Length: 267
Image (cartoon, rainbow, N blue to C red; front, side):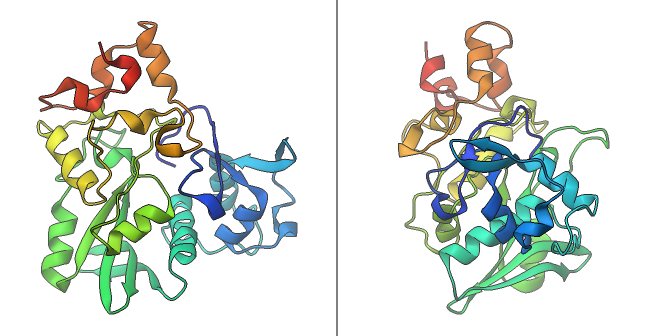
């Protein structure tokens, strides 16, 4: 779940490029978990403008707790992973998808094969980069190197700040595609990453998706950037009201402050 704060924004599986948010549509949840509508009877949905929606954290908790009958088995998976699989299927109907593939001592989230090209995808949440109750993360590229050396296939890191959308799926296989980044409610920000070269790490991972625009990362925070329905991250207003420091958004090792800030924070 990428350690989400207060939910906002509605995700739409059929319009993933322009819809960014924490709320999932009822019919999308059925498709993501491969269940019937009746299997969601235990979930309390909100009704907004005729749409039945639920916070993705509630759905993941119910899934993990076995409260959604006939849902896909956990298999070390997260809801992020299943949501990404659903997006991948929308983007490429003929793609081959394998889950939790073993390579050396690692289990890889996804192995994708399309038109003869194979690659691995690892979804990385915040604690691949920031401290957690289990301690500090290790080398963020160690698994990638090990898998690539062992298989000869690229291992792409899909971090939580890369938007879950069809365009980014296409960017996996086509270097000419311009990807998208989005941060709308995470509580773990770039300034919290532990690595001295965090700015370089973020840039390396993000540029694999061609998701950095000419101004940098500011558009990630919304609102309504890149012609999307993406809400503004609450951290922007907190900084404007001096309730938190601007350093929260600035990763270690940064050189150009403007590159990392939204337009509203440019002074």
